[in-house]
Length: 433
Image (tube, rainbow, N blue to C red; front, side, top):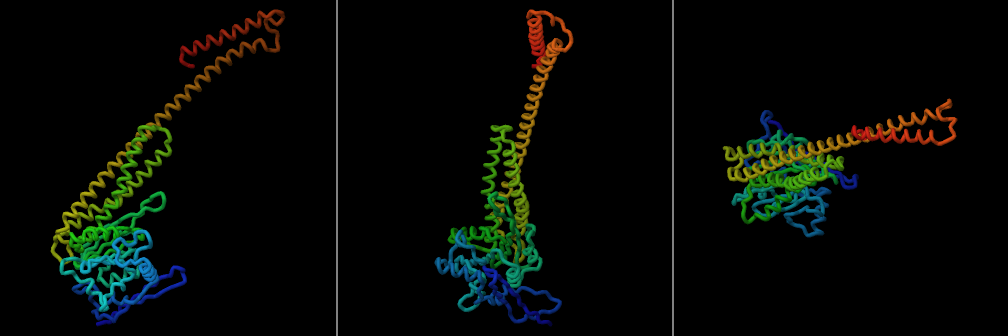
């Protein structure tokens, strides 16, 4: 036998960069055999590890508490809409039926000093939901140890570019989804990860983006449906992925409008203002490719989750969410089909526009060639007539230089004029001018 103390430390910098606070979590050593891994108990939660945070406050929690006292915010389902940054944790329990935004897990301590009453399953079949927004590495380690999460899941959670996946473990199943937010005025899409760990008694979700609104949207939806739906852990997992898919709807509408506008501009404007039109097509195609990349893996993830439903085992999803997952899968397939259609329209518009530009360039080249040809013909005519004039301007004896009348002058002028007219008529007949 060996004694393994469980102790970790969270270090946070203050808002000024000079204040620091060390919060230590520790508990008596746990006796384990050297050759055996750490196993989860029946309830899959180490309440002693969670309860050790009671009474501890961080600068983030102090800021949150000051805000709640000044704004009388106790249990607001749409917390964090626009006023301040949301708290790190938000907790829902089917027993109390309340959606509680908190800044520290220690704020959930019951009057008897325990947490087990909150995380136990509800007699009515409801579940708890603990959402964590943008946790740091120490907080992830704390949750991993407290909920007996597998090291492979811990590794996937810590990876910033983890691929979308779903995995079934002994007492939970784990899903990783990619969502997005818009960055800057240009509206570039930046992806982030949403990790969902579903136990039979409840759901743990971790979102690595401060701008994410998925948890707030799900909490608002739960507030509307609390009198009609029993919130199981599988339903909460479904609601999260459903909100992620619904977040693409606004982008799909924007791309639909942009695609129609580009198609009309190609037909109406033609080759005019080619640079701006090509840039619009390029930006719209970038959006289409980004959304396609984000949606491409979700169809297989939802399909795998549907196949897991109804399997034997304590962690397998229940079969009652199969219709909901089928609806999500239909939405994903429809969106991907629409994206392929938009991409085809953009490619066709780009090809048509480039063809119009090529035709316009050919037309311009033809006009330039005709103009140069006319100028060359006129130049040849006048140069040839200049030879006649130069004959009588040489510094040698020329015919008529001893004549005192104007006959020679009028004769030479008549030859020049007649020669010009004859040359112009011949060039016109040959379509040279």
